[in-house]
Amino acid sequence: MLDQDANGHSLLDRNLADIAEETLGKSVPASLILKEVGPYRILRLLGEGGMGVVYLAERTDLGTQVAVKVLRDAWVSPARRERFATEQRTLAQLNHPSIARLYDADILDDGTPWFVMEYVDGAPLTQYCRKLDCSVEQRIQLFRSVCQAVQHAHSHAVIHRDLKPSNILVKKDGSVRLLDFGIAKQLESLDLQVDQTMTGFRMMTPAYASPEQVRGDRVGISTDVYSLGVILYELLTGRLPFDLSGLTPVEAATVITEHESGKPSAAVTGNADSGENSRALSLGKTAWADLDGLCLSAMHKDPLRRYPSVEALIRDVDHYLSSEPLEARADSWQYRVNKFVRRHRRAVAATATSVMLMVGLVIFFTLRLAKARDTALDEATRTLHIQ
View: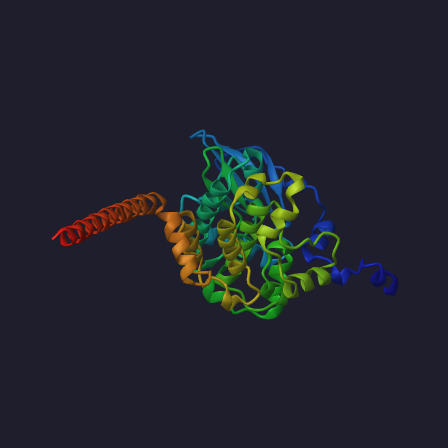
């Protein structure tokens, strides 16, 4: 045991979901290699995780394609069945164009539960942006759509708790779909015991998990706000704020809870040679100051110092897109004047031109009047001398 611990392979340090996956086997059980589920004909396997197996299926009478999710190893634990049922109930109450919809649900003859949801033929958010070489503004517009979906879930008292690019697919038409509410929680049920919260964390991707999730503290709206901040950081820089590769869970937890992430602008500058998201390099200092403020305010270690809601984050995203002052930045008069000039560039230029023209005319006529006055005085002086 001491040798195993010294080598960093202690069973206690490993992810519970990974251990369960090894124990149960990585391949789909023969019992779940299905040909039909209710009125749906299975076409092919789309993917599988620690809890569910997802198939592409076709409804035989309508000819529409859907995604069928089946609970794998339903016999293992009542808690797994309850999480599966919770995901069904969560999807059933969410009706938003950027959230994959629930269509149907039932159980197999052997008692295995399944449900049917919208099939999304798309690419993960970051992969989509990389493939199409999206501009910074396009990335932020996509991010805004994700925020709207999360805000809709929050308005129904649902916290996603597992926001990451692989759970956000972008279709060919540029619309986004938020997926996988497998470990989502209702706000009223978030006051959990620490061990329950930590179990939820082990099922998540640590790189996008908030510090309070790592510590096993109570989670809430601010938890999703933090994950959105990490996603925005990755969209802007092409990298994560913390490199957790090769770290043990304990080391990764220390980094997430104690280390401060650098500014996205610094990450882009340091990653310039890779060619990743090269368009971001062309942004000016003012734009990057705003983007730094957006990311770092959403990703603050203290939940009370983050954006108080996703709605507040959306407001600042809109402020950025409209060249308006951000709520997350210091409200100095120089900053507000600069944003006003950028927002009303044409009007300011026209006004400045008019003012300069008026000043020029005033100076011109003032000089003419002064010259006329001087001429009149000279004439008066000469007249007095002649007399």
